[in-house]
Amino acid sequence: MSAPGGELRSASLAMVSTAESQGLGGVVSAAESQGPAGVVSAAEVAATVTDPELPMVTLAELGILREVRQTGDGVEVTITPTYSGCPAMEAIRADLLRALRRAGYENAGVRTQLAPAWTTDWISAEGRAKLAAAGISPPGPAPRRAAGPVPLRLGAREEPIACPRCGERQTERLAAFGATACRELRRCPACREPFEHVKEI
Image 1 (cartoon, rainbow, N blue to C red):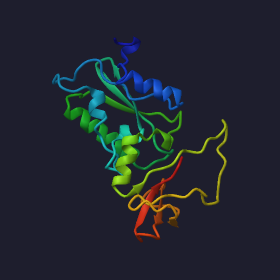
Image 2 (cartoon, helix red, strand yellow):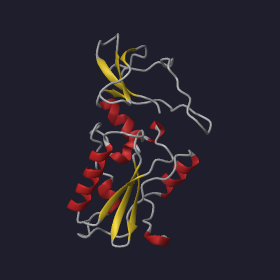
Image 3 (spheres, helix red, strand yellow):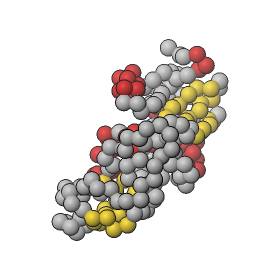
């Protein structure tokens, strides 16, 4: 059932209902028609692309991949950055276009959507499990804020962050930033291993 304007149908109506009920905005749409080779849809191709900074998770699992839409004789992919000015967006766009063109979608485009803003609550359960398996502490629930300007908090968070390796909850922060601005560096006093934690946004 093609929607007006050539929209691609949703991959899962259950996923749409869940996302809407949780206020998570749109979800990835699956292609109505098959690709040029008759094997895989554009949405399925886009959903396999991994994040360049967290290669253990896909863009779909991270919540960055918002929609795949058919536009005339091509496809358009919509992505939302983890934060405005994220330096990985250029690489993400290039990786998506490369994957789609390899699958036969020559006329493909990628657009950036800033609103609604990305939140760590959009990371899927599978994505969180993959982060933990890779030794990266997944984020807890994102802060709930009223509409309007976002308040700036300079103090450290009070909630304990568990070690992804041994489960010890009383870990210590070593640095406010890890390999990227959206992660912080911590250390576990039990197993003495350092690890990164994805900040709640």
